[in-house]
Image 1 (spheres, rainbow, N blue to C red):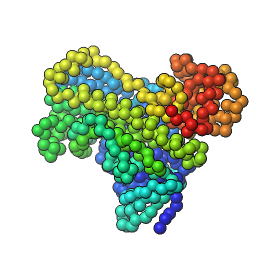
Image 2: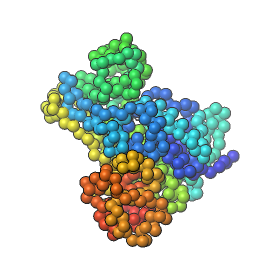
Image 3: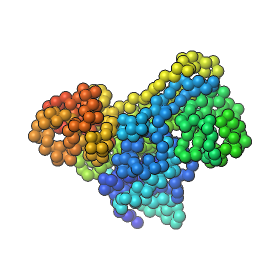
Image 4: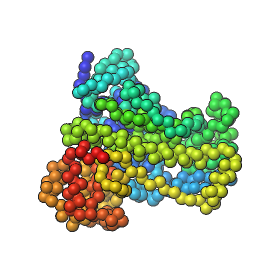
Length: 501
Ligand SMILES: Cc1cc2nc3c(=O)[nH]c(=O)nc-3n(C[C@H](O)[C@H](O)[C@H](O)COP(=O)(O)OP(=O)(O)OC[C@H]3O[C@@H](n4cnc5c(N)ncnc54)[C@H](O)[C@@H]3O)c2cc1C
């Protein structure tokens, strides 16, 4: 029996699927989410997300709820050598950083997933079916057809959708159905993830993340939220994985910091960290997002972040195509933009992994000498640019995420922009555009914001531009010095597909 046709079917209800469903729900699109498991995956995986990701949750109308289950991490991440000397610090930020919030946030993944799932209750046109496994799918000229097995009744039903997004994790069946291959970026290393809940205050435990770059046994320590703490512990040659997860071994491994009297074990699991990226994120009506498209070692806490950025990049493009405002070639820019962006994060995570995972004592001594232990370099990773796609301009800040300034009326920028394209600029430049451009903005629902707010003016001055054109995902589509330049980039707005580089 064939049922309703959905605009979008999302396979997988992890962070990628749940975030995408929230964003598409806001656009009023009809969405079906299919998830094999009955409940949220109970074991903690991600514990960190960044300011840009908080902004996506904010766009989805969930910032307050996410703040309630997370904490800002203001102090940054420390890389210490075996002697405890700091080699390198990944800088922290103020509570209100460039995205209108802290740059780093810590959380417990199952709690975030509850927030995302609750968020969908706002959208009657978004249906969720848990305990439903997609067993096969077929792309068609007009629609894609999925075979869906109800794991409780055992019945299989066909479902149709105009687009299918495989948010179905590392072992993605959608990816396999598309014939998409993973490109191996080189790092595959087993680590033990050991989560505890403190029973008492343990004053010696830092409140920030520490990478213990000890060649005898590299480890990461993280303060998660509340009384949750995590150690990630690299497996060394000769380790017996079965022995490693035994309580007595676990307590021995962290005995420098903690005793069994001070905490309860929440879990201990060995994961192999991978660095891989798919080549071919779209085939016809089928697309991939999240771990299905890429996986990174967690040294930067960026795997889920990339999944959320995928959702943000894809949501407005799907809406434009489904509503007939853009050719479906627009969806090809999803991979071309996102793949180099996520690649940049994976490369950095692998580089940091090389620092952390040094096990040769001589190499560790050379590394320590290079980093001048005791006088640590403080680094910040500049926001990568998107790969080729819907933007126009030779250099940054074009194709980078726009910051979120505080406006003079006390609101943050995104509250004013909503889900629209936006133009922000000096009044003189805005006044100088042609009547055609003005009509054009109106027809496209572009939000026009004269730069009266000091923080916005400062950004324009620092960049040496008179106006900036933003996409609904807050990436910079183009910058202009004059009304004529603004006319030129604005002319590209409706036929977005024509802007593909
Ligand atoms: C130890 C560890 C630490 C990490 N730390 C961080 C961190 O600090 N920060 C960060 O950003 N990331 C981190 N990550 C990565 C992060 O957890 C993942 O990137 C994220 O969970 C991926 O989300 P996803 O929605 O793409 O996939 P998943 O969460 O894997 O969800 C996929 C879903 O699809 C479902 N599914 C699969 N096949 C089917 C099917 N055929 N039919 C129906 N449903 C199906 C699955 O049941 C699953 O629920 C960490 C990962 C690990 C392992």
